[in-house]
Structures are given as structure tokens and as C-alpha cells.
Image 1 (cartoon, rainbow, N blue to C red):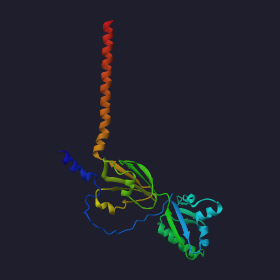
Image 2: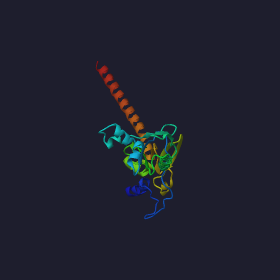
Image 3: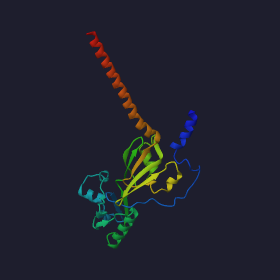
Image 4: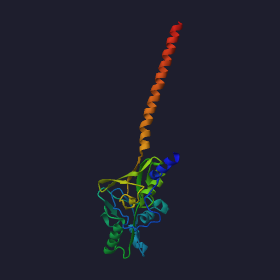
Length: 254
């Protein structure tokens, strides 16, 4: 009986168990996401003539103004995208970047630096500095994750939260996403190979992931308060009965 139960439970906790072994699939798309308000962007301009790029780099400008500050102290500087999707970039002024991918912003800056005669051979790198997602529900360590990088899959994020508990519902993981003022809710089945085709497989900035408890956890959560209440009632009744007995006994002795 125990072996039968264990065999039945295996598909509930295994990931992607419907994928054939040694299978291969062509990745038809590339991960990209648009810049949105509250993104903190790191933008770095390079050139074969470094002196022409100095004025466009926050780190270099700050180091010039503040002697003795190490490069490690510059890691948190960046361009915060406001609610209108704008940043203020040195020399070029206010730029609307909302909705652009990082590559599109890099290309736009390179073209403007060339067209306006500032740099003849610019190479612009754009990175997100405050990429975070929140993991809630039946995982071993619910938390907000600060991701070092710009791309994370649902499996990578869950592993950073200690993986699902044995009670986590693997077929119904919810991802709540807010972008450009629009909230969408997606559902992922971690046991199916179809997850790789979902737009929620790669998490976006500020996504919230919720792992629903399975039926056993739900039953336990409703049963335990009932059991506790029943035990409390029995103990209270027993205590009352003992009190009445002693009260009656003492009065009888008088």
C-alpha cells in the first residue's frame, strides 16, 4: 500500500515529467522586455577615444568630482525611469525610453551621439540594476529576490526561494505581472513541457509568483483549527466538571 501511494504521488512533485528523454527543441524567440517606470538603468558609453565619452558616464563624472571614490562605490548610480517613462541623460537631456528594449535604447543613443557630433564610434551598454521578483506561497523560503542580471526563468527563481515544498501545487503556479499600467495574470504548469512556450516562463521586473497549496495542505489548514477548537472545548468542559466536583465535595463535607 505504501509503495502504491508513493508511486501515485511522484507525478505531483516531478517537473516537466511529460517531456521525452533526450529531446531537443528549437528556441523560436528571444527574451526581451520593455523599459518601464521605476527601472534603474545603468548606461555606459565607450569609445576608441575615451575622453569623448567621459561626459556621458555617471561613474566617470562622479569620480572626477569625488577623488578617492572606488569604482565599487559607483555600482548603485543609474538613471531612474520616471512615471512618464523618461530619463535625463547628460548633454542629450530628457529622453523618452519607456517601452524600449535595452538594445533599442543602446541603438538610439549611439545614433544620436554620432548624428549630433559628440562621438564618432560610440558603443552604448544598457543594463537593469534593480531587477526583482517576489516569490510567495508554498515555497521553502518566500522572499523578494534581487536578481543579478536581466533574465531569470520561473525555475531559477523558485530555486532561489528554496524550491517548492512537498505541498506546493506544481500544476497551478500563478504569475502576476504589471507593465505599462496593465496587470495580467498567468498560470504555469511546472509538470508540462508546454511551460517553455509560455510568456511567463521568463519573469519580468516586479513579477509576483504565487505557489498555491495542494489539496492536502488546504485540508490540513482547515482541519487543524477545528481539532484545536475541539480539544480546547473538551479541556474546558473537563476543567469545569472537576471544579464542580470539588465544589460539591467540599460543600458535602461541611
